[in-house]
Length: 581
Image (cartoon, one colour):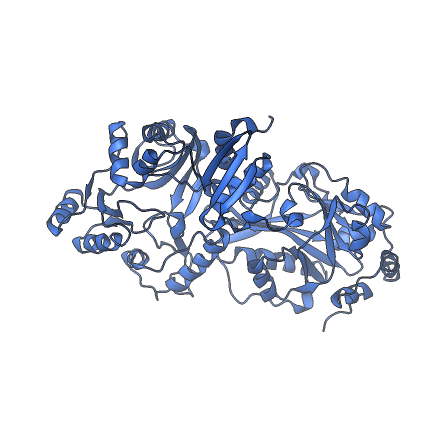
């Protein structure tokens, strides 16, 4: 049976919001006199202002206006938001997020066991750095641990999910004990800042973090867990609904600032852009550059500043000549150009008749088949070692371009280097799509689940196709789609590492070998292209051996956050718009 809620919670669940005076009186009746001072808990990225601990709307509004630069304060449990907003309507706004509550009596433990990672508290500088790297990937504000309210004073606790194999931090969540923070008479708690690595292949990380927080606070004899979720974040709402959360009619207020701008301005014309165009438009807005969205669905926009106007299609701009674009699109021309520049390239020839194709295979043993003009990994088949595989792959590639290339296969790691203005800006190892067995689900079910996670993390840009190439990778490992992968076993379900087919990135910018950096810059100059993504096969990011695979005239700069790809792109287009140091 559910414990009796206080009159305040009963009103909230019925959609009623009492006045400040009545609310304070009710909390006094419940045996919990308000602190002498209003409660503001610092979470490292900003403060949580507990609305009902402030004596009146004006004092709460004044405290929100004391928000520090670069931080984000949130006033929550605001019973009469219109009274607070009336104090400073030009500077404050009503947060469009929904508040959800789970009464612990409604909670049901998980019936499925998730393996491969552990949950523990953040406890040292390395943990904070790992959380902040995760936050930057999710466009969240970083934590300054020096600002945190101490735990004995009611401050928050951060938990992390740590991969058992690699030791990498793959998720994080923050919890606040309301009893210790502000003597909550209902003994509640709240969840904040749930984040999971968008490239994580471990299933259930977000769910386990939420469940861990619930069970942690249950063990502390608390009664419920509240959380705030953006009104349009349906993926998160589906998870919370499965766990038993329901809507709570209370409100939060924030201050208008650059961080919160999308929340109080609403969706603009850039809302329809894909992530690769949106990251550039957002950086242009930050610089005060005029943006005109020409065709959101195709990522086409025009930037204007200081009398200069440049049209862009994602990272492809007027600055890239048609010749340079052709050199990248035609993989045989890319090969010739880079070879003439003295760079390492694979052996290559056009697919011909059966005898020609067989002779090339016999000469190299393992080969790659790709359309001469293609992108996003479409029609590419890697590591083929039988004539039958080659012929099937050639026919598949012809559906994208009637001209098909055969290349010698070079084992190693797939490295993408982004060069902007003939300077190396970012480098990342691209890893093929992979799934982790749990001993229960079939490989096809694991692929479908991982594909859904990749689509959600990339706004639909990345998914694992269920095509002949995926089936070939599964069968090459000795399995079929209906096979059950043993618990903990990692299976690569694609041979290529393209992000659009479910791959993921590991940033290696800091450790890139000087030879690889120099080769990438030389390649960009040989192609005479100002913005380019260059793909190599390497033994390791910190070793000098390489073979160039291809060049991409429209590199996905959003894939390399938190490296400053968008900043360097706008620097190239409008150097005088660079922000002051």
